Figure 1 (cartoon, rainbow, N blue to C red):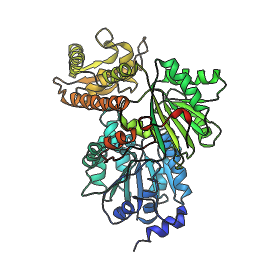
Figure 2: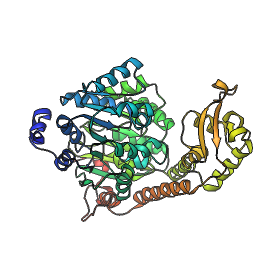
Figure 3: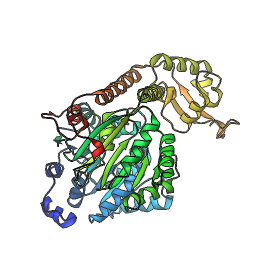
Figure 4: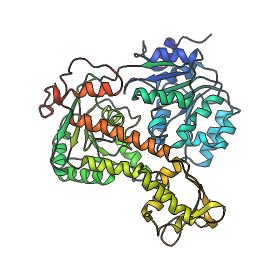
Length: 494
């Protein structure tokens, strides 16, 4: 008979009672049932698998999207008394071998992996001999948001869940009704227990600030981050992140910058300083923050709204996790829509553009329907796009064609890594026919999300209600805590 989950919660995490939504999920998976949990940011998703991990017979296997998040999750799991580790490319081969040996020997309770590592045949073969007691997909909205676009391994997690003789638990903080259905279908969840808690965060105050240009947004941001507590400033590009950090520094405001272009050790240092309270302001792209649980973030500023309300809710929701009043502010400048339209055109090009590129590829194919990427820079594909795709960038026409099966990566041609122009000699396969319906559907979905962001930006009605309605939750009276309900973000917080 299982130890009572509440007793485990008290013994390992020191809480007398579960937070709303946690206990039904824990009891569902302990009863052998699949489950989907939509719990608000800061709602304690990790406890939903940490408690069962103490109880189930076998390994708790957790899929998580980022190495930095894995490392943080390992630390928290160990703090809860679990024997935990992760596998990632940042580790040495000796470290990975030790972790695999520990799993095989039954010396670990929890293992964190990325979807890409789980997609490797070597990993699946090794895990086939391991008793798995619980399969967990954390940040499960990535199945829908990233799996379609640039991390197809997320779409293959369903094949894993169907061969693992253990219940599957999917967890996320933000998912519209359509995304919930996508998670359930993609993972192949069988009659799952679905636990959806309110998306409302009563302590958060919302505003969209109109600014005539980027410079005005910078000046306003400087004033906002001088306020109390910790501030996060999100910029849409690495350039905006760097220039904003430099502008703040010119005013004597000490801030760290964080984006994917920085070396790994530097990113780790920024994150550690932030978590230790040594940094009051971090300016970052959306690469920063997933899974980072810091209680005293008082202000989150977006220099421009992201391309989806899902992303905005995730990022803005890092404010006020301690329940204290906090601000979620986004700037709107005249050029924002053009930037987002360009982003969608780059990530999900229109069908005529894709067909033009595919025909160009077909004209260059050699034997066995393959072509060297380095030979293609004389056509409609810019050299920078070719090089970016060769290095894993999912944007652009080649990425879109790959997602709908029009091209495939085969390997390095002739063993040579790069040509004289710096472009990898990557040999790709080009199919004789291409179905662009998938690309059309993904573009249509991305444009619909962008329209929702535009509606939020322009709305004259309550911001809180707009967010709740988007996530399928009924909204009633105005919140009194947003710019449309009379709250003045300049006067601070109660």
